[in-house]
Image (cartoon, rainbow, N blue to C red; front, side, top):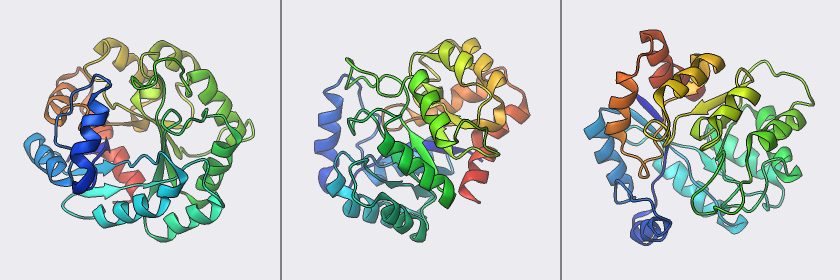
Length: 268
């Protein structure tokens, strides 16, 4: 079994326009951005389940983004998280709505939402997610669309973590850091974040950095807290499956990363 824990798709009527806009930042898409495009990619790659992570760029998008998330979920191997924005009014009530709708978590994106990860608005959101046993996926590190400022560095992530958990180590991980904890700052992730109660996903990283460094991070952090992810359509699913399967990891490590950890989060 293979679960890709970090993918995106867009409603058919806006997919082409959205993909064209995002490609203007220099990364070529590997699908057309539609739900069917993702399903076709999954079939080609032998992926059983893809987790879709919607990004809200404005608080007013809450209803439409989460309605689409619920519409996509449980259709042909698609499971969608919800979305929330730090400017949402009454975020606790909105998170309660997401929980009651059956979605397993939310996606936040500090760069597209113009907010540093240790901002009190995010702290409030993440704390309530922890209380509700919702998972939070956050972009981590550089985003090519915003090269001048990084709103989720390892230092800021560690500060967020300490604020959310009041300086104590939680018993379980509810926070998932995309891009192995920080795009292009893997050494700092190993130094500052490895071993803490985060999940790390592999989105866009498997062909971006040295494989020995990835293996070092996996073993420093623990394969039980690593999630296979591509960031499709911004990385090719089939290629990433082949890369992960070819890496000199143990079968137990590969199974943890490819599906066991994700099944635990998704309660399947």
